[in-house]
Image 1 (spheres, rainbow, N blue to C red):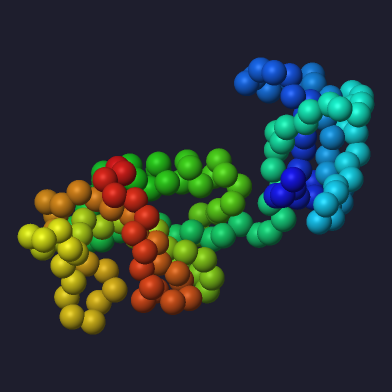
Image 2 (tube, one colour):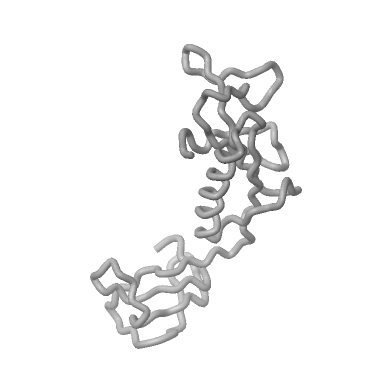
Length: 159
């Protein structure tokens, strides 16, 4: 299996979608290219048992995320989008919210980009992000804090 990480937790597969706290579980203590070693945390495991991952361990620092918005956004739009993004980020364990721009991480930039008649984004000369249009649907774009000139569309019409 690929993707097994040290400190991840696996439980016996019960045949049900429900994860039961009473099932035997193991914690991965080391990984190799073709094998992994685990310690039993509770219960007993025998050869042939099927295990499923119940908690994935990410062995790196969370990516710092700053959420910013265009000046054309209404405060309630920005707050609703920020709340939704924050909720999703906090549940993953992969990201942590930054208080403003940092030296590393990403910026989730909320804006209402203008589009030309052909559907292409409308950019002003020498800009990274499209021109704002208060009547356009909101989108979330991701910018790298180290190189904010690189912008990538994340989500359209999400909020």
